[in-house]
Structure formats: C-alpha cells, structure tokens
Length: 127
Image 1 (tube, helix red, strand yellow):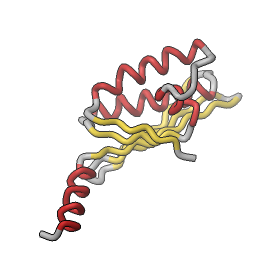
Image 2: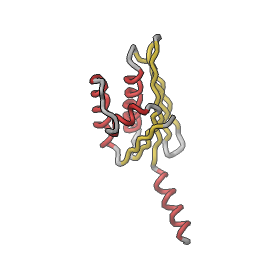
Image 3: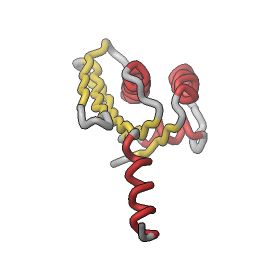
Image 4: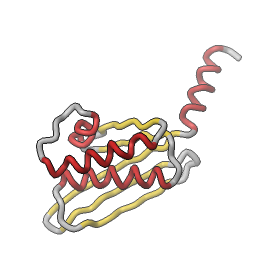
C-alpha cells in the first residue's frame, strides 16, 4: 500500500466512530427552546426540539449542550464533536472566558462533569 493510501485508510478509521452533535438554544418573550441534531456514525440522525419555561438565552444555550451530551452518552457515543453556535458557552467551558453570571456556573460544572465520560470530545463554536 502506498503511504498516502495508508494515511487515507487511517483517517477513515478515525472518523468512523466519531459522533457529531449540533446544539442551539434560544429564548424570547414567549419562552425558550432547544434544538439538537446528533449524527451517528452509522448515518442515523437523531433530532430533538424541546420547549422550556422562561430562561435566559445563555441558559438555553447551556441546556441545549447539556441535553445533547446526555443524548450522545445515552446512545453510546465515545468520540464526539460538539458544534455549538454560541461562543460564550464554548469559551466558558474551555476556560477561555470567565463566568461572570454565577447562575451559569452550574451549567458549566455539569458540562465539565459529562465530558470525561467520552474518550474524546471536541468543542467547536460555529457561526
């Protein structure tokens, strides 16, 4: 096998068991909502949308990430790439931003409690 073919085969194996999670949360005067899309390596797509009572937009974004991580774990994910559209959540979880609102600390703590259950978990902020 040529070296580039070996590298391509290795890259293919590395992505075979990678689960991909997209999360989004939003809040307005009529309530809060969360959206999750979990792409399973087999090609299956799991979608969830959930309405919540009043919460801030920051809380809705955190809740979406937490529920998405729990959904991935429940379905057996070990390697996960989490795409979150909210820069605040990603940067607070990774420690780049400080948490100024104390009520958000519990959300960040819960995400940090869930992450070690994965063999690998990458967090990406997407626009």
